[in-house]
Image (cartoon, rainbow, N blue to C red):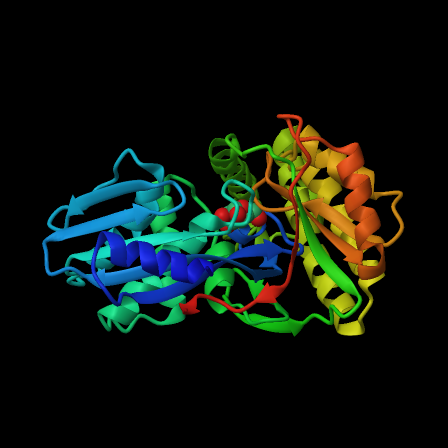
Length: 383
Ligand code: GLA
């Protein structure tokens, strides 16, 4: 039975017939990591892995949730919304709290959700969950939120209920993606452009280190602060600086004696990564995937050496691809400290790639790594 039908059936078994069904995708990011909260550029897309939602009003003063994959339930009074000790429920409560904060009346409802986005793999299952519920409630109760408003409120839900001061990339990608396209998003203006990716001879392949990124939220928030420190130093030296987006490499070089080494590394990485995203989009426009792949490697080395959000397993997976035929690019993806690498592989080398990776890499619990080939899909929608 398809996943969407499993979720619907579970809903009807536990609650009542005929819920609305929504599917909300995970995302990849081809290049532009840790740039979003620095008002820079990113190049993500949704993929063909989803969290499915079944939702229906229940006529009660209660929100009742079932996390299908975890077989875990949670319910709470609709009169009082606050964070709870079930991590998965906080993503959902965070969305409700945002809408309630806008003065929306959200009558009680039942919700079952589950799907096939691996958790803790850096594919943003959290944004898929937030945006999926936000989309479903907007549809069900005719709140009239725009897609952009849904993305922004889902991001705030993550800040306030999951404690991660994330940028806008994930929620934007989850809601705005189109099949076969990546989005070049300017995280300062939120201007965006869809680039069609001709993938007839190439595949996007994810390799899961099997390391759950548990350090991610504390180190993530620390990186944000380190970048802000850099901005604060440069603000004193030049007018009109609000973020690293307003900073040139010249300005950093001129003031380098005012930075400690760590802050200097973080800031130069961000400026270089923004340049790489712009260069990568030029490569897409010219169909030059070889040069695009080289930029992916450069991105990884920057994340490893200057931004220091990689880990031994991610580095190993990238290193293994360096001598391989048919691998155009590879890098760690997402927040870091575990999760997946993203690889651009020529289709006629795909089997070889999988074989070599499986021979050479074992996860920390000594099993073969999970390898997913994904296609670029559309954003959150009715299923
Ligand atoms: C996480 C965050 C995003 C982004 C990436 C790193 O996925 O949710 O906002 O900062 O890390 O690029």
